[in-house]
Length: 345
Ligand code: SF4
Ligand code: SF4
Picture (tube, rainbow, N blue to C red):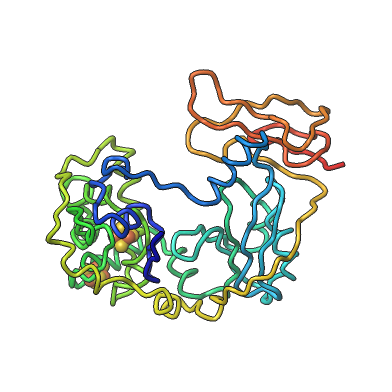
């Protein structure tokens, strides 16, 4: 057993491997290349339940926190509306709140309560954070690509703090995100070697939420550049070696979680005393046929069919790579499209 320092992003699998073994997986590589397998504890618990008892994944536990009356842990069947999880936490304290699905650094920002009504709990759901409209995380998430480009061109001082604090650079990857900023700011990201470096970004957000003194958005810019490079079929073709000398300052450049939370304006939500708020019991669930990497599952049920919790309702397509989908409640199928809607009862 090993105790990790309290820093961000200690949970990133490549950083975890480096911390525990002193070995860095190569750029764009996986931990297996340095003799490691990293598995999430929750995933292992689900695997154990499947192997030992044949149980399918039907429910997830979520942390509901931020500007809510009662922060805590909610258990919900897959396909339950996120808004019902919010209700179990007493609802949002502000009428015009914004929401983050996932964690504060890498989660997806949802614009308002109306948009949240369209969101459901899936196998990958882990958290729902309620924040005041106009907070740093909200403003950063709604910047347009055009605005990010103009700000990168006008305000990036090429101080390279984003590169110097980048966790991937600090484990030896040949990645200097300030060069992507320079290329993006001048509109040269698709035709330059610097632009291709964006492929090496794991989107942890340490650069834009902590490092950059100008409050620019290297993470979102890397995301946008990666998407554009993929659309143009342009792969990373740079070096794949690990440069040990880049890690010389790593121990001194770990980002303390409490300081990061203070910088993000979320320190007051960091209490770990999160009570169990019980289980959501929705009248209906809408279970997406794609909750995983790979091809969507193919529905095995039709409107009118009766299903039982745990029953397989979506199969992996022939010759496809994907995952099965199971009913999360007993009930009657009322619709099948990109999701299976089941009326509970
Ligand atoms: S830290 Fe900010 S200002 Fe400095 S190089 Fe990076 S993006 Fe530019
Ligand atoms: S998000 Fe920023 S800090 Fe994280 S890997 Fe990408 S460039 Fe580095």
